[in-house]
Length: 199
Image (cartoon, rainbow, N blue to C red; front, side, top):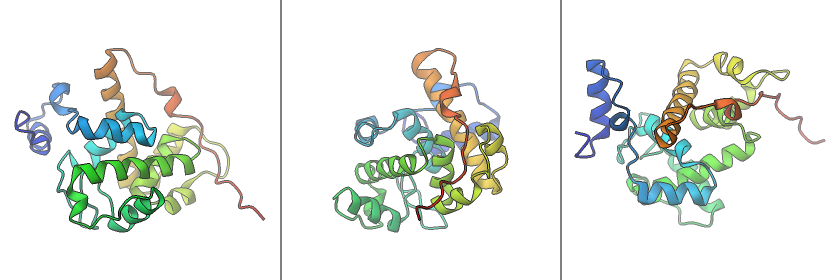
């Protein structure tokens, strides 16, 4: 399945069989010819793009969620349209979002937008990507809090698990790339309250 590029089937089968140690197979880097330029253009590390892609679609380009999110980075058509307009790109149709050459650049740019709006903090960015920026903003603490504590207190189970899993995925990708222990301190800067609105 891995050799054929059926990465979603690899993950399903490995989970059923309890096989979790073949990291090269379980954490592939498909679509590198598109993902790496997309990450570079959006100025985000490729490991983060791959971490999100793995969690969102298991690398299945035509994946469609019950909420209508589409493609490798599970973009909602409305979000894709806003991101495309902001980047002066053509607005894609829902069917076009199944094309990795369209989905990956737009998804990477949307991650960059959220990262910029989230004070450069990846846990906040991931929570916003999953649940929406407004929801993430409501969950920010009333006073500065350690990131790991904030993550553990995200009130939506799905979003809490989503953030935790992608942080793990990124750690594995970084370890596979460098073969060095991963020190995620720079990913876990304290989470600050939502900035006060300008008067």
